[in-house]
Image 1 (spheres, rainbow, N blue to C red):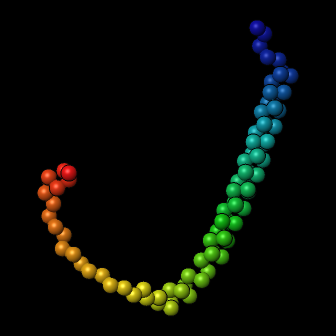
Image 2 (image 1 turned 45 degrees about the vertical axis):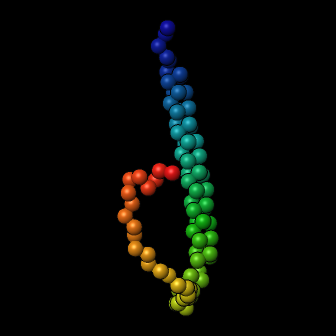
Image 3 (image 1 turned 60 degrees about the horizontal axis):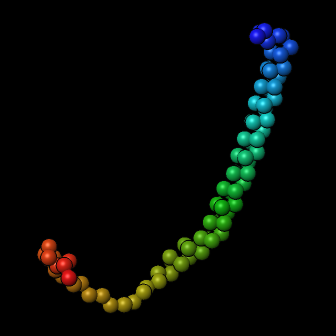
Length: 81
C-alpha cells in the first residue's frame, strides 16, 4: 500500500476537526438540556416545600397513648412451631 498523500492527510485532519466541533456542540446542547431540567426540578421542589416552615412553627401535636413493654429475652427454640 502506498502511504497516504498530502491531500488525504489534510482531509483527515479537517474531518477530525469537524467531528470534534460537532461532538462539542452536541455535548453542550445535552448539558444545557440537563441544566434546564435540573432548574425545573429545583423550582418544583421549592414550590412544593414553600409552606413547610409555616407548618413547623405552628407546632402540630399528635395526641395518643403509648406503653413501654419490657423486652422479653428470646430463647433459641422460640422460632420452632
